[in-house]
Length: 155
Image (cartoon, rainbow, N blue to C red; front, top):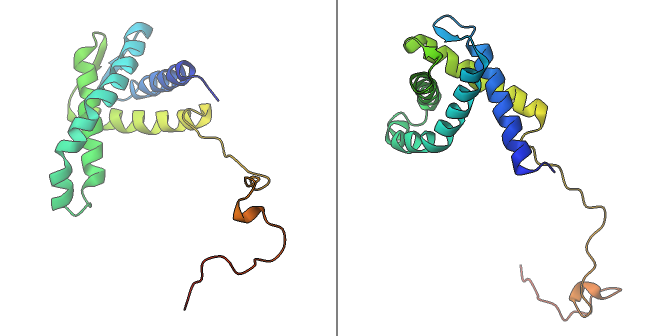
């Protein structure tokens, strides 16, 4: 199992690589490594701090659209956070609505794939090879057929 710090570092690295890929889109610019790394960190913080508030605020819209608007709402939230990261980080520019939509989609998709490849937050499967041994005196501790003292289910 990976430590929380290694999980954080791998997630930050995958987000930074995703921001790098998104910076190749028209309307998104980042020419140096420090602003790129800072933009990935700011984007991660915005996702942790601002995204839940925006999701909670969008619940009425989700209910009005009977859930059909959820993909559009999520794309808009990603675009808003990507644009906001561009406003907060000097050297990382997002020029307009469509570049922020494209950048948000690219960052979401690329970071999701990289997180899967890096194994970030993947839970290992736990397999049990044998049943646990019951405590002495427990009804399952008996060997042989039941003696009829258990509960009766009348059908």
